[in-house]
Image (cartoon, rainbow, N blue to C red; front, side, top):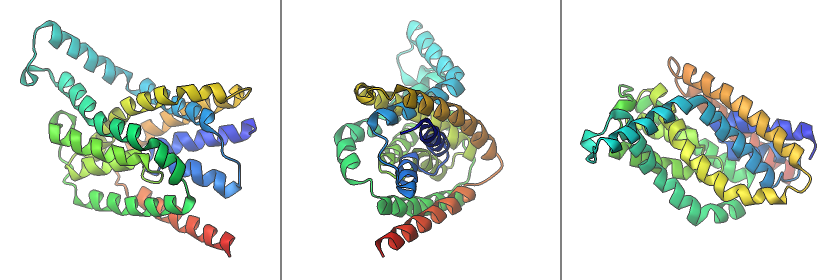
Length: 272
């Protein structure tokens, strides 16, 4: 793989990881469209590292405030959750919401990687989740904010995140949709989705790190993929949060349907 292809895939990762359009799905569809060989797990580690860096760079103040508050509550002997400060409660809810994806990843990640990476299946899941996003966008009352998160919210959004392991679902698409069903504002839904996704990225990167040993001479490609996914990812987080303050998810719903139709049409044409 040359550096140009590495940069293209990094840009695809940065765009599709945070927009509700499925990064894993696009990293399958784009190489399939251009008939590029599989980029390999070592390169994927670099891409995931880039998007994790983007998340940490954008939300570092949020994490600092949450961990500082948790430390202060611990030092003050505030053991009961009802006595915790608001940032400490949010940190606890993020930890709770991370459990479903962690368990699902440990149990099913290998099976999913081996059996569910076909473009036609990605296309179907793109369309299915587009329908769910449309329903959530229409159903939400959009009146709750992050301070209103409850245990039930954390569990339900966490379960939605677990489904993002399936290529074509989209981590942000699944979690934002569930938060909308729980009547959070679109902006708050996206912020909660991004914060909840950070521990999942850290865990996935730890599990995938040994694959970097297989890079063998391809470290320049990994660095290019890392840098491009980080820079594009940071810009996309900023843009999406601003976008959702005044707009709906309809743009992404239409895009997902269009990509699904085009993918199935190209697949059918190649078979014919």
